[in-house]
Amino acid sequence: MYFLDGHVHLEHEDMFPDLLESSLVNMRLAAGGKQQPQSLQGLLLLAELPGQSWGSVVQNWAESGKQFTGKHLWHLRLAGDSDAVICENKQGDQLCCIIGQQVNTVENIELLLFGSKTPYEKQPLIESVTHALQEDSLVIVPWGVGKWLGKRGELVINMLVDAELKGYYLGDNGNRPWFWKTVAPFDVAKEKQIPLICGSDPLFLPGEVKRVGSYGNIVPKQLNLEYPLQSLMDALEEKTVSLVPYGQLQKMYSFFISQIRLRFAR
Image (cartoon, rainbow, N blue to C red; front, side, top):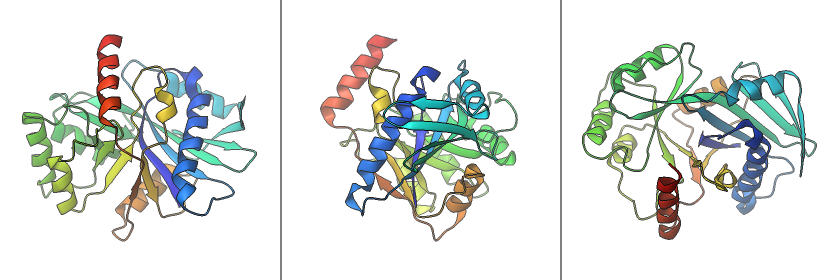
C-alpha cells in the first residue's frame, strides 16, 4: 500500500525540502494505527498554479541527482514518467512527486490536470474535462471553499450525471471544515461509484507546508515508481480497489483563522 496526497501546492522551490519532511511526518502519523513500517511509500500530486515555474526547477534537480541534507538525506531522480520525481532517503522511504497544473475553467471551476501533453486553453467545464481525458490525463475536479455553490455546483452535478463523460474524479481537501458535512456532488459521485481523491491543499500562508501529507488516501496497491501516474490511474480504474481516506478535516477555529489570514495576505 502507499499514501496519496492528491492536492498539493508549492509556493516556491526553496520550500521543497520542507515539503518532503512534512509529508513523511504526516504520512507516518497516518500509518501509526497500523504496524509501523520500516520504510514508507507516498505519492504527492503537486499542481503548479498559472505563472509558477518551480516544476521545471525540481525536475532539473532530479535529472542532476540533487541531494538535500536535513533531518533526512534525500536523493532525487527522475521516474520513467517525465513529470514525476522520485525522492528517496537512506531509511528507505520513498516519496514520488507527480507535477501537474491547477487551472480554472471559463466558469471559474478548478481542475487538477496531471499528464497533460499540451498547455491548457481556457474552456467551459465539460469541454475542458473532455479534452484532458482525450490526452489520457488524470483529471480531478477539487472541492474548494465556495467553489461549488450556486450555479457552479449545479454544473458539477450536471457533469456527474452525464453518462457519456467518464474517467475523471472529484477531489476533497483538508481545508474543508468538519461542520461542512453536506457536499451534494460528493453524494452524487458516491452513487455513480466515482472515487473521491483526498488531498491537503496547503494555502500560501506561513506554516502551511507542514500540512502536506496530512490528508489523503491510502491506496491498497503497489506503486510502480518508474511509471507512477499510470500506476495510480490503473488503481483508480479497478472497481475492486477502494481508496481509504485518512486525516482529519479542519476544526472550526482553524478554518476561520486560515480564511481570515488568506484574505489579509491578498
